[in-house]
Image 1 (cartoon, helix red, strand yellow):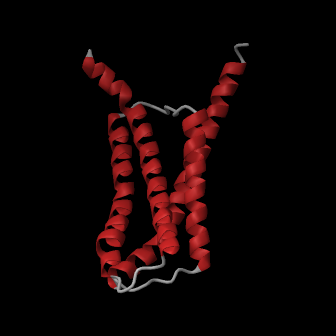
Image 2 (tube, helix red, strand yellow):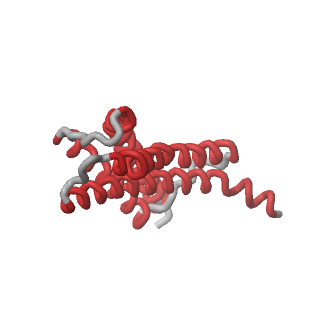
Length: 165
């Protein structure tokens, strides 16, 4: 029975790292695809923006992959603790917060600047669909930031335990 425990731990490590890397890759694709749209919204606020179908498919796919990886990890795989380092933990928690800066900026530009300046709002169904799409992307980015924060806290954790004693 003892030899099985390291194999299970190794498998858990591989699954955790794979899920985190896939989630990071999907987040990178999401940023890469959305950033040009973000720039257009800033430069042409209030003008209706046409989205290429490939961009829509790419954004929806990346957000879906991020959610699948996040919830699979959250439900079935423990956060892996590679080592203990207060500094690295802080860096990961900073990256967690920084990764959501873009989501907050995107939300602000769309809902506080772009939409109020539109001359004509889209039809109700289209408006609801677009709003749900933006919220799904923001939620995927939020979950990714939580994942980075959890890893940062786990890496930093032992240091806090020593300070508490």
